[in-house]
Amino acid sequence: MEVRSADCRALLPLPECLERDWARRALALLQGDAHRSADTHLIKPVFSGLDGISIYLKDESTHPTGSLKHRLARSLVLYGICNGHIRQGTTLVEASSGSTAVSEAYFAKLLGLPFIAVMPRSTSPQKISEIERFGGRCHFVESAAAVYAEAQSVAEQSGGHYLDQFTFAERATDWRGNNNIAESIFAQMEQETHPVPEWVIMSAGTGGTSATIGRYIRYRNLATRLCVVDVEHSAFYDCYNSGDRTTTCPRGSRIEGIGRPRVEPSFLPEVIDHMIRIPDVASIAAMQVLSDRIFRRVGGSTGTNFFGLCWIASEMLKQGRKGSLVSIVCDSGSRYTETYYNPDWLKAQGFELTPWKDALERFLDGGELSLPTG
Ligand SMILES: *Cc1c(COP(=O)(O)O)cnc(C)c1O
Image 1: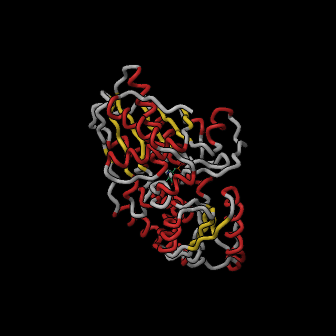
Image 2: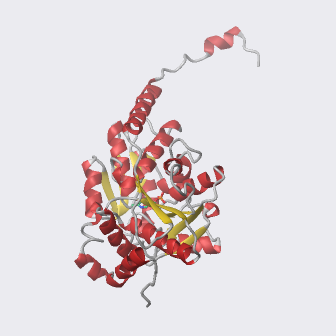
Image 3: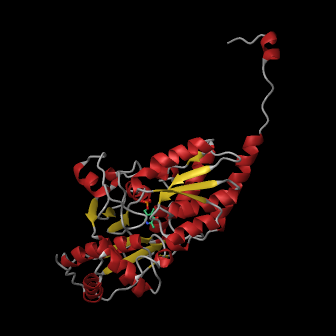
């Protein structure tokens, strides 16, 4: 279009760039957090019964906020700023069963933004106090299924931004690399006897980590397969088998951080090679057994991961296959002293761990997995 000089005088002056100044300072703070962080360890516990099979665990409990959600929270906040949704003074809101909210509260504080976590009332007291220590506010709902709509409405009422981990986890993380968890694991494996793992085993909460790993395996053209382990009260496993994304599950998961009442948008079954559903009692038993073996307490979802890893290791042993298996320590056991590590709580929940722990101990030392029946 031709612009005449008269039109030019009617044009508005160019806007000041104050908003972008804040975004630039925020970006520098987020990049500083990443830059100060060392990569997390890939630990290699040795179990005498697992001849020819090397086990690796990516220890995500050592992030400043104690779980793999440190990566997700940084990515979600970065995504919100770069998309222009998070600005100076924006209240951040999240639906979270705990760990994500702890990490997001940390980043909100880093950027000087208010933070509200919408969570089920059953969330562990340790997580609630961690969120509050970072200056976050907790907003409770009665059922796990109610968190999404409530978070949306809290964000609308406060003029804030709903970070929405369950929708954006799969896309806020750069799946091709940029030191995502998959790139880090495969780089750390490079010098090993079996550098390309037979399997990576991971549980699903948002599904974001398994999406990143599954995509990265395809992108890098690796022979590794991805096994996702699910828990008793969760919609993921049935969705994987039926293909029905509208699957729901009436009861909330008893393993914090994983298992969801609905199929989350970030759960991508197409990049998963196999799924296993693990009894909750087995997850907690595996959590305790692994904690004893690596001299440090891990969380419940790590138990789910470890039980799945043992199952696959047992199948490999039966077939005489050698190779490596990788899984993830998602968080530490310090958040669960009142629950999964508390004998009274376990008893009240009806969990009888002994036969499962005995079976796992025998497997790790002798190589034969014979699980309790009934
Ligand atoms: C979120 C979470 C997971 C699962 O990770 P996703 O990437 O969300 O699927 C596992 N364990 C713990 C403790 C978590 O907080």
